[in-house]
Image (cartoon, rainbow, N blue to C red; front, side, top):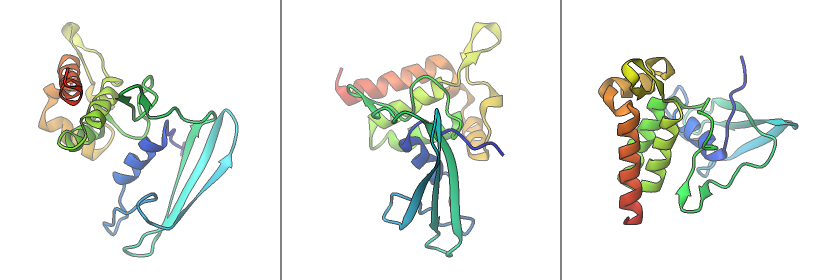
Length: 174
Protein backbone atom coordinates (compact mmCIF):
# COMPACT_ATOMS: atom_id res chain seq x y z
CA UNK A 1 0.00 0.00 0.00
CA UNK A 2 1.35 3.42 -0.94
CA UNK A 3 1.95 5.75 1.99
CA UNK A 4 -0.32 8.81 1.64
CA UNK A 5 1.17 12.27 1.19
CA UNK A 6 0.41 14.82 3.93
CA UNK A 7 1.00 18.37 2.74
CA UNK A 8 0.90 19.93 6.24
CA UNK A 9 0.58 18.83 9.86
CA UNK A 10 -2.83 20.59 9.99
CA UNK A 11 -4.05 18.26 7.23
CA UNK A 12 -2.61 15.25 9.09
CA UNK A 13 -4.54 16.24 12.21
CA UNK A 14 -7.80 16.39 10.24
CA UNK A 15 -7.09 12.99 8.70
CA UNK A 16 -6.58 11.46 12.14
CA UNK A 17 -9.83 13.05 13.36
CA UNK A 18 -11.69 11.22 10.56
CA UNK A 19 -10.13 7.87 11.62
CA UNK A 20 -11.11 6.99 15.18
CA UNK A 21 -10.04 3.71 16.76
CA UNK A 22 -12.35 0.75 16.00
CA UNK A 23 -13.49 0.98 19.65
CA UNK A 24 -14.87 4.44 18.81
CA UNK A 25 -12.31 6.54 20.70
CA UNK A 26 -11.31 9.52 18.57
CA UNK A 27 -8.22 10.57 20.55
CA UNK A 28 -5.14 11.20 18.48
CA UNK A 29 -1.71 12.83 18.84
CA UNK A 30 -1.71 16.47 19.78
CA UNK A 31 -4.68 16.30 22.14
CA UNK A 32 -2.86 15.64 25.43
CA UNK A 33 -2.29 12.01 24.49
CA UNK A 34 1.15 10.37 24.93
CA UNK A 35 2.49 9.55 21.47
CA UNK A 36 5.64 9.43 19.43
CA UNK A 37 6.56 10.61 15.98
CA UNK A 38 9.53 9.25 14.09
CA UNK A 39 11.07 10.36 10.83
CA UNK A 40 11.76 7.11 8.97
CA UNK A 41 13.08 8.51 5.69
CA UNK A 42 14.57 11.87 4.75
CA UNK A 43 14.97 13.21 1.23
CA UNK A 44 12.88 14.94 -1.40
CA UNK A 45 10.00 13.52 0.62
CA UNK A 46 10.15 12.41 4.24
CA UNK A 47 8.30 9.49 5.78
CA UNK A 48 6.92 10.14 9.24
CA UNK A 49 5.33 7.61 11.61
CA UNK A 50 2.90 8.55 14.37
CA UNK A 51 2.13 5.92 17.00
CA UNK A 52 0.21 5.82 20.28
CA UNK A 53 -2.00 3.54 22.34
CA UNK A 54 -5.74 4.17 22.20
CA UNK A 55 -6.79 5.53 25.61
CA UNK A 56 -10.17 3.81 25.20
CA UNK A 57 -9.06 0.21 24.61
CA UNK A 58 -5.24 0.26 24.70
CA UNK A 59 -4.98 -0.94 21.09
CA UNK A 60 -1.75 0.27 19.44
CA UNK A 61 -2.39 2.77 16.62
CA UNK A 62 0.06 3.75 13.91
CA UNK A 63 -0.09 5.90 10.81
CA UNK A 64 2.65 6.70 8.30
CA UNK A 65 2.67 9.70 6.01
CA UNK A 66 4.95 11.03 3.32
CA UNK A 67 5.64 14.73 3.91
CA UNK A 68 7.43 17.45 1.94
CA UNK A 69 11.23 17.32 2.23
CA UNK A 70 11.26 21.06 2.87
CA UNK A 71 9.56 22.40 6.00
CA UNK A 72 5.85 22.90 5.50
CA UNK A 73 4.60 26.36 4.67
CA UNK A 74 3.16 28.34 7.54
CA UNK A 75 -0.60 27.68 7.45
CA UNK A 76 -1.37 31.36 6.93
CA UNK A 77 -0.56 33.48 3.93
CA UNK A 78 -1.25 37.00 5.16
CA UNK A 79 -4.74 36.79 6.64
CA UNK A 80 -5.63 33.67 4.65
CA UNK A 81 -5.48 30.36 6.54
CA UNK A 82 -4.42 27.28 4.52
CA UNK A 83 -4.90 23.59 5.34
CA UNK A 84 -2.66 22.42 2.49
CA UNK A 85 -0.28 23.88 -0.05
CA UNK A 86 -3.02 25.67 -2.02
CA UNK A 87 -2.00 23.98 -5.28
CA UNK A 88 -2.54 20.22 -5.14
CA UNK A 89 -5.64 18.29 -4.03
CA UNK A 90 -5.41 16.38 -0.80
CA UNK A 91 -4.49 12.71 -0.85
CA UNK A 92 -5.67 12.32 2.75
CA UNK A 93 -9.20 13.78 2.65
CA UNK A 94 -11.69 13.69 -0.17
CA UNK A 95 -13.82 16.72 -1.16
CA UNK A 96 -16.80 15.54 0.90
CA UNK A 97 -14.65 15.33 4.00
CA UNK A 98 -13.33 18.84 3.31
CA UNK A 99 -16.93 20.03 3.03
CA UNK A 100 -17.65 18.44 6.42
CA UNK A 101 -14.68 20.39 7.81
CA UNK A 102 -16.12 23.60 6.29
CA UNK A 103 -19.54 22.80 7.78
CA UNK A 104 -17.99 22.25 11.20
CA UNK A 105 -15.93 25.45 11.22
CA UNK A 106 -18.64 27.67 9.67
CA UNK A 107 -20.01 28.39 13.15
CA UNK A 108 -16.70 28.87 14.97
CA UNK A 109 -13.83 29.83 12.64
CA UNK A 110 -14.70 31.34 9.25
CA UNK A 111 -11.05 31.46 8.14
CA UNK A 112 -10.75 27.69 8.56
CA UNK A 113 -14.15 27.12 6.92
CA UNK A 114 -13.09 29.20 3.90
CA UNK A 115 -9.78 27.32 3.72
CA UNK A 116 -11.66 24.01 3.70
CA UNK A 117 -13.70 25.24 0.71
CA UNK A 118 -10.43 26.19 -1.02
CA UNK A 119 -9.47 22.53 -0.56
CA UNK A 120 -12.75 21.36 -2.13
CA UNK A 121 -12.13 23.70 -5.08
CA UNK A 122 -8.84 21.91 -5.82
CA UNK A 123 -10.93 18.87 -6.87
CA UNK A 124 -13.10 20.79 -9.39
CA UNK A 125 -12.94 19.70 -13.04
CA UNK A 126 -14.97 20.61 -16.12
CA UNK A 127 -18.16 18.66 -16.58
CA UNK A 128 -20.66 18.37 -19.40
CA UNK A 129 -22.35 21.49 -20.70
CA UNK A 130 -19.44 23.67 -19.65
CA UNK A 131 -20.21 23.48 -15.93
CA UNK A 132 -17.41 23.07 -13.43
CA UNK A 133 -17.88 20.87 -10.37
CA UNK A 134 -16.26 18.19 -8.27
CA UNK A 135 -16.73 14.86 -10.07
CA UNK A 136 -18.47 12.03 -8.21
CA UNK A 137 -15.35 9.88 -8.69
CA UNK A 138 -13.38 12.21 -6.35
CA UNK A 139 -15.38 11.04 -3.32
CA UNK A 140 -13.37 8.11 -1.91
CA UNK A 141 -14.74 7.71 1.60
CA UNK A 142 -18.15 6.83 2.97
CA UNK A 143 -18.27 10.10 4.94
CA UNK A 144 -17.37 12.06 1.79
CA UNK A 145 -19.93 10.25 -0.36
CA UNK A 146 -22.61 10.77 2.30
CA UNK A 147 -21.89 14.53 2.36
CA UNK A 148 -22.06 14.60 -1.45
CA UNK A 149 -25.46 12.90 -1.40
CA UNK A 150 -26.87 15.55 0.99
CA UNK A 151 -26.29 18.34 -1.54
CA UNK A 152 -24.60 17.65 -4.87
CA UNK A 153 -25.10 21.20 -6.09
CA UNK A 154 -22.95 22.50 -3.21
CA UNK A 155 -19.96 21.00 -5.05
CA UNK A 156 -20.39 23.20 -8.13
CA UNK A 157 -17.54 25.65 -8.57
CA UNK A 158 -19.61 28.83 -8.51
CA UNK A 159 -21.38 27.76 -5.29
CA UNK A 160 -18.11 26.81 -3.58
CA UNK A 161 -16.53 30.14 -4.53
CA UNK A 162 -19.59 32.07 -3.40
CA UNK A 163 -19.68 30.32 0.00
CA UNK A 164 -15.92 30.72 0.50
CA UNK A 165 -16.01 34.39 -0.46
CA UNK A 166 -18.98 34.91 1.88
CA UNK A 167 -17.07 33.39 4.79
CA UNK A 168 -14.10 35.66 4.07
CA UNK A 169 -16.29 38.76 3.73
CA UNK A 170 -17.99 37.98 7.03
CA UNK A 171 -14.66 37.16 8.71
CA UNK A 172 -12.89 40.29 7.54
CA UNK A 173 -15.89 42.64 7.39
CA UNK A 174 -15.35 43.46 3.73
